Length: 393
Image 1 (cartoon, rainbow, N blue to C red):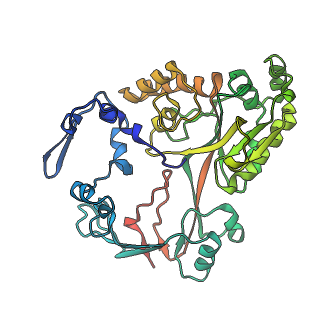
Image 2: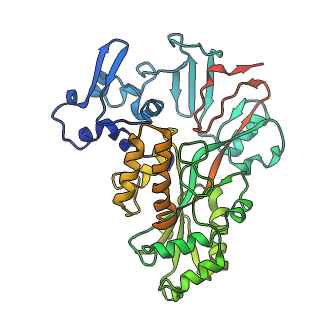
Image 3: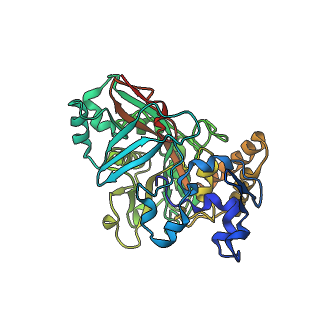
């Protein structure tokens, strides 16, 4: 779920418009004061509001072209851009950016950048080795096996959490006690050891570096206590239920993680879980645990915790909790960091320790291959790549 449906990101000022409660766009609270000034009025304080403007849902589009032709606004000659580069040409699997000489801040140091899109990972690596490419972005650890300990490999932890969630319409997955049992049966250190990439274990849904991150959040690995809790949960005869499936909503690189989780639950609880790599592998009305992830759309904890509120368009679990929703709402509008931290602590207690609609597992990492002649290559926790300061030797 990387940068999925994010309309609720703008609900701090645009929820009424989204729900059709405004008579005209003029009531939205957005007004151009002059050619360089935009005034935005919000329904309530939104602590992360300025960060929203780094997300594509807030980027400008030429309304005249959008009304006339739904495709013409995206053509290079018509595309509105705000950064140090603009689109020079875009054809299938080939994108060229050129320096934007109208950019009001520090100009880009490169005149142009040539992107090759849609290459198979192995072909991209071969092109890098033959020096046809200066860099390969977002490459899997599997493709890096021949580059171990080489300085061309760059990596950065992302604001991207991999977690388990549940089908709440099926027993016993609708029971928070059973979900807690599953969480207590998972040793995150063992899970991470099974993976190819250096990832960081987390027990909460807020990644390190953001307000509300807590290193001690979430249930702890305790298989003995999990067995005891299972016996008193009413599901000690779990073998009489239909099989539980682990649906992997990630790339194939996540299959080792899924297999490790399956083995851990079997070892700790003697519960058999079957892997499903697609929806076609799931029988009708099956009991499903999902292995999935969420990457930040904006660098703020609200982006992760609002994901599981009742209004979220990205919350297919069926889980809702009014107290949780209110805590997340209050935290988003709080005027101080200390208050936000206290509210997020209460919200995460519900999310990852009592109700447990999710079991956070680890933070993902982005890998790139970059030629030694490329200097100032940008990597950051959002996975965005501002190439303004990049140079070539």
